[in-house]
Image 1 (tube, one colour):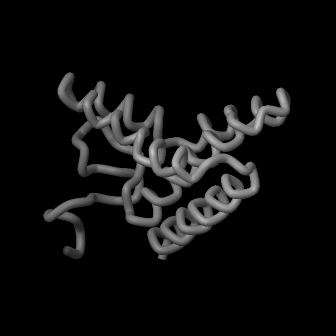
Image 2: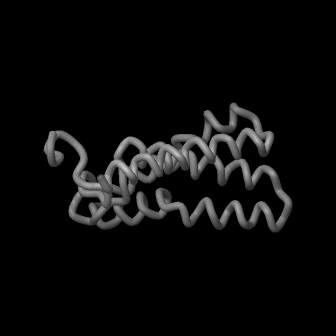
Image 3: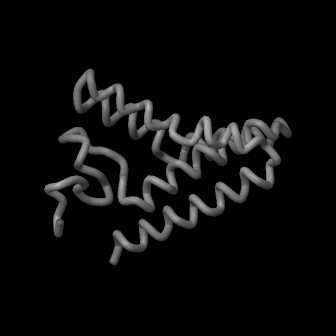
Length: 122
């Protein structure tokens, strides 16, 4: 049940962040261009599991978009709000699919459980 709730939470974040992006009035081309950008952090896995997990987690926690959104509100800057919304939508989408924050033991070990072919219950 907790995994289902966390996935539903991810779905809610994805939907609300996408709605916030639309509300900010930025171009949907920007959304399409930047939506998968946090996944570039996968490249850090070439330096090992510890570096990969650190980079992935840095770009896949809601702390970053929350700070960026706060800065956007403080500066009254709609582009920062739009980018924060895209970032948060990406995180929500990943959580909805079951991709969680990574442990240093390997890419497939996440806070939402193991992912991949050898996942529990697969």
